[in-house]
Amino acid sequence: MQLTKENIFELADRSTDRRPIVMPYPNDLVNEQLGRLATMEDRLTFAEKYGYTPFEDVYFSPLVNTAAQWSEQLKWEVDETDHELFIQQRRTLETPYGRLTEQTRRDKKTGLVHKTEEMIKTAADLKALAWIIKESVRVINERRQEIKEALLASIVPKVEQLRGRTLSVIHFWMPHLEVVYPHFTQVTMLYFMHDYPQLARELMDEAAQYTQFLVEIGTEADVDAMQTALWGYEQYSPAIYENYIIPYIKPISEMTQTSGRLFWNHTCGYMKELLESKMYHRFAVDILECLNGPPSGDVDDWLWGRRLVPEGTITKGNIEVGLLRKGPITEIKRATHKILVQSEGCKHILSTSDDILPGTPLAHFEAMMEAVDEYSAERGLS
Image 1 (cartoon, rainbow, N blue to C red):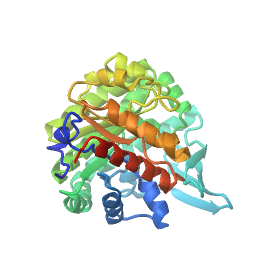
Image 2 (tube, rainbow, N blue to C red):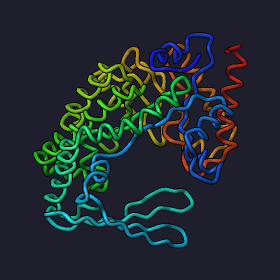
Image 3 (cartoon, helix red, strand yellow):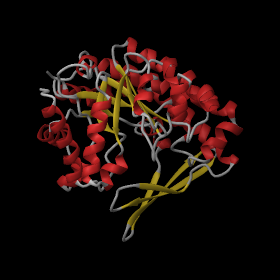
Image 4 (spheres, helix red, strand yellow):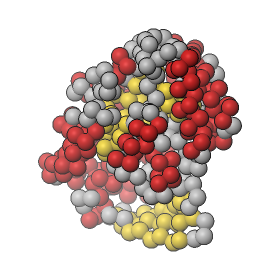
């Protein structure tokens, strides 16, 4: 039986005699194995070879990036310098309120990107930031139909290509991330939200229009799911959740599910207090990942955490990405078997705790899949 948004709750039910759904996100691993950027068909072929259920992002582009495709005023000047171990990129944008610059380094071996110069450096840059957000929303609203037609022309063929084979997903940032994440470091963005709450909410109200626009696009394209991500309490405080996340995520979740799409949330990091405070009960979530334990999370007891998840929600995870990359293979297999046993009787999809990290040996990924085969054979699951 093929996985669809209509039957995913049934197939994720671990109280049946069906083989567990395995749904990792090994795009970097596939790229490394091929020695090039994989196509959608490459990824589907890789999934078929190893016996897991893939999912495909059919669209992901932040607000400012999307608007820049339709406005010369929002296009950045880019200068790249190729060094022995990394590629340095410097970007510059002229705004009515001054020039903004930022710089990043991309490690050639791992592909990881590190910001070495942040865009918003002083309070004087905030007027330029406000202009960027508001101008981006103005461009999208002004050319709404034209942009919608262009995006649908790109997304719909991908959805049709995937239908009956895997889930199609539009990934989007929540409004607070559209405003702060690309423009600040992870430290200074917290200062911004604390020190300039009125401006932060004003810009998030603007950005929320783009989030709603993407849900409309996903509905018309008939995608299976809308996916977003949050940080846990290692990055956000309860006050940030109350002021900047819940007021925006709840209406987006409702809009997504009213349209017949799955609402899929990934929370990075610490989730223990989020579960204890029933934060996930305050916005309906169909798929929740990943209840991770140390070192990247704080849910020491997975079964305890699973009991605090809203009834009917599918959990997804829980093989720690650092373990998968470093090994050893015996520990990867042990961890895989453990989560399969613990999730019996739950609605759960086996996966890693996030993307599979660059540099993860293929043999380690194969060990995880072999552990699923061994578990299924032990229990006679088909």
